[in-house]
Length: 225
Image 1 (tube, helix red, strand yellow):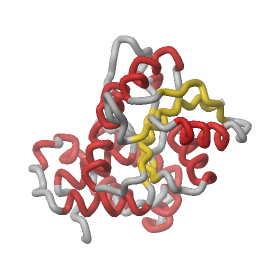
Image 2 (cartoon, rainbow, N blue to C red; image 1 turned 90 degrees about the vertical axis):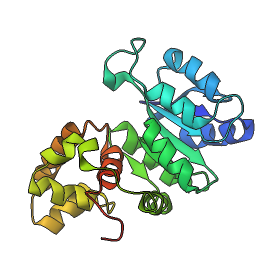
Image 3 (tube, helix red, strand yellow; image 1 turned 90 degrees about the horizontal axis):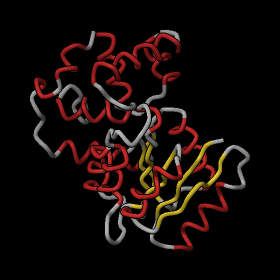
Image 4 (tube, rainbow, N blue to C red; image 1 turned 30 degrees about the vertical axis):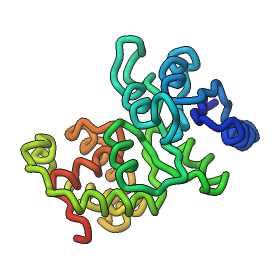
């Protein structure tokens, strides 16, 4: 079972999400929080695998709550016990996307996404991958494109990537799956999975999204290239 915690200041929204999730045999809702502060206090008790987090909430917004939940802490067990966070919002705004990903979110989805897309997204994140809605991916790229690229030295792991790993991360930045990257590079999917694992390790990234953010911010990947 995938344990999910809901964080939203609107009771009707939480009820709607609960109905969608509990209709699935492999998902269970283990807690509901009314704002970010409530979520931070509840997460250690509820022990969710995935936190669905609204962005705009009173007392503490979803960005700060995500940062606190994803931050390594002695109150958590090993790193894999730290829940993964999917940000949910009605606002497709660049600043929120970038801030959420920098805070440690593993995904970002709009609230008007179809129920099946939400459910699939939770499973993807719980499996250790990352997820961005297509419109959000474009917003992230556009936002980073307006910023001056950091020096590669700011991301030491970038310089450690092999030529093949650079090929792979550039395709990751386009939103391609392992299967699609394997097809594009004429390699086996297992080989691509190995390359992705090495990329994450070298960049000290939790997931694909964090690696892609580092690739854009370092200038390794140029929007529109």
